[in-house]
Image 1 (cartoon, helix red, strand yellow):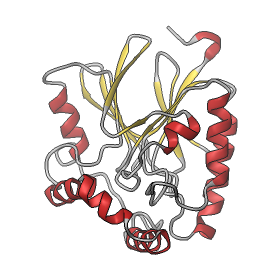
Image 2 (image 1 turned 90 degrees about the vertical axis):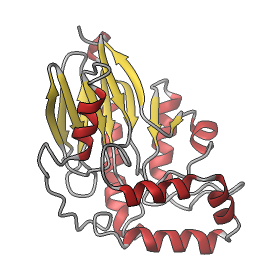
Image 3 (image 1 turned 180 degrees about the vertical axis):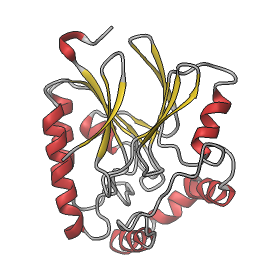
Length: 251
């Protein structure tokens, strides 16, 4: 079975716009907008799986400066009637309701199940899932706690945003110096997570970002783990046509 009029569902993740600087990020933003333009004619839906921004915090009346091209294109596509779904990543986990109220784009803070053409998907950013990475998991609990958000919100945006952006780009992965390598099926946390989930329920596809490493791996009978890669080194995205899931590169 395929979607009516040859429609497709598109997936992308880990753009990290704003890093390492707004000036160096701009060509990547323009490339992403060009990709959005290229898919809007046959998109049944678009899924953005987190870390769209290298840092994002929503104050009561203020959001980070910039990204007008990306936000405008998302608004245009959503206003045309194409559904867009956003999953927060570890760099934009402080999203509140800006996307929902301004763009009519629902925001999810954890994995969510979807079914398309009889295929069951588990979709999310992927951070903090699977075994290991205990330090990050503890840190995330602190970051998402309401008191932490309230405390950070008292910083003036000129201070808070600059501080967060500085700390964010200290990570080499985000600054474009990625040396991410495949660790093997027995060490990739998201693969192990997918296999564990299959013990209680069958999913045809586990679609995640976070690892910045594009791959499709079988994790069970008629079950695949997909990592979408990133828009720093790979410029990859996922496409589901109702029957098959592919990873492609936008050039």
